[in-house]
Structure formats: structure tokens, C-alpha cells
Length: 351
Image (cartoon, rainbow, N blue to C red; front, top):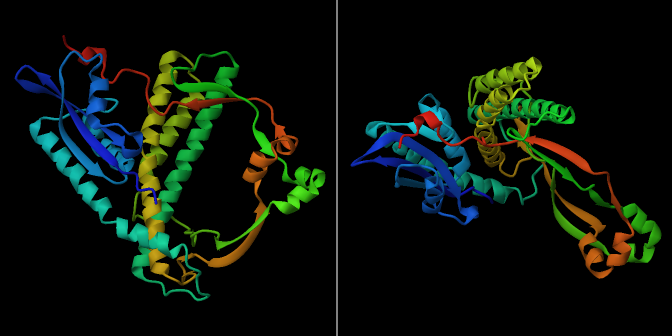
């Protein structure tokens, strides 16, 4: 189970005997194999003041914790991940970070139990509906709606940037433009027709739990509980309005991209809320196949037979390649998920 472990760091700037009010709140994930100190040394490049690393907080769901801090302290943002805090404000931010870390640490047993239950076949009956299960259903619905808003807005922006790129507009300061080779696909039906003996030889049968996943009962209206979608809806409307304005100047696209960055800053929050809501609902289901008026989660043992493509590729590569098709090259234009501008405005930098 991936818990997204890592460290939230608070980097400050020294100014003589004291420090400035500028604080960078960032993260390093354990999977990166780097430390907060290494990140600080990277940020030191180009900064005229000496940086310090006074606070680090270890946590699970590190991306979510960072996102929540960035959103909660948005009014103090200077640029990018730099915020303005006096000593008291910094102490409060660090305390808030520690509280979030403790909050998510307490969720680990629920996540582990949900994973254990995922490997157990369910019974045919439903568990009784409770206020708790309805509350988690509502949180799941709100997070799902927020995610849908983000996805829809992102696709709209991708299409717009791709259109501009096709018109010869330089969008490289807000998007990554790349051309990938055609997708390679293995045609198992063609392999069966050409090499029936090999196809029969490399059929592998396994028994595993089969499930369509947790399916909450749809809600007609979004509830007030859980993460709301007002911020996502507001930012999405602003982004769509910017697209419709069609200001393809450098400044216009940069402003549009800033809105996009604000919007996707909500993404970890919705993902975390949905994952936690799913885990709690699964634990409340237990070995039942769902909860009355709340959700279904049917799990059955299923025998599955499929072709061992990896073994064929390794042991019969010539025959494997004979059944591989290659699609046409694809140009992708994806909005940058981080700003290419410097961390702090030049006007904020002092010698």
C-alpha cells in the first residue's frame, strides 16, 4: 500500500543576524531518494541570501499535506511556494503541519484494514445503513465531483494549448510539447491465428479476487459535508473564461496557467478525501457486499486464464514482434504542473 511518505520542509532566509519574513514550504518524498537539505542547496542557487532549514515534519500523504498548507495559507503567498510569515506565523504553520501529519497517521489502520478486506470474498448480504456510512458516502461524492471538475477543466486547457501550438503560437512557457512514437500494441488475436500451438502453450490460469470496486450510491445533490467544490468550480469558471477570451500573448497565457496551477493544487485534497472515504466505507462494509442505500462492494473468487505475453516476448521474440502493431506518432501538449518562473519576483530580491 502506497502511503506517500515524505517530509515537509520550511526553508527560511537569513538577513544579517535575523531572517526575512519569506518562508518556502515544500516537500521531498521518500521515493525521491533526496533530503530536505539537498533541496535547500538547490534553492540556494540564485538566492542572494543564506538559506536555513529550521523545521522538517515527517508525514504520510506528503503531497496532500503540502497542498493543504499551501491552500490554507494562500493569503500569505508571495510567489510559488514562498510565503510571508513572521516568527509567530511560522510557528503556527509548523504546528499546523504537525497536526495534519498526526491526523493522517491515525488513518493508517483504516487503510490497512481496507486493503485486507479487499482480498476476502464478500457475502451476499448488505450491512445496515448508519449515519457514519452516509457521512462517508457524502464525502466521497464531494471529492468525486471536485475531481471531475478538475479533469474537465484540464482537458479544456490541454485542447486550447494544443490548438495554439498547431497555429504556430509558442506555448513552451506554459506547456510541455512533445512528439512520441506511435503506441506499440500486441495483437493477441493475430498471435492466436498465426501461432496456435504457442498460444495454447502460454495460457496461464490464476485464481484471484474479482471486484468492480467500491460503488457509492449516487447522490442527487452534493452535500455540505466533506471537501466542497466551490473553489474548484470558481477556478474552473475562471480558467474557461480565460480560454474563451483567447488571449494568446505571453502574459495572457501565463495568467491562464497561473489559474490552472491554483486549480490543480486542489487535486491532492480531492484524491486523499476520496481514498479515505473509500477506505472507511470498505471497513464499514466488512465482509458484506455493500451497505444499504450507501454503496456496493461485491468481491468474488474468479478463475482467470490469459496469455503470458511477457514469457512469449522473452522466449519467442520473433513471433512476438510479428504481432506487434505501431500506431501513428502523437503530438502531446500538456500544461506544465509547475511554473517556470523564478520562485520569488525580482522585485522581492535584495542584494
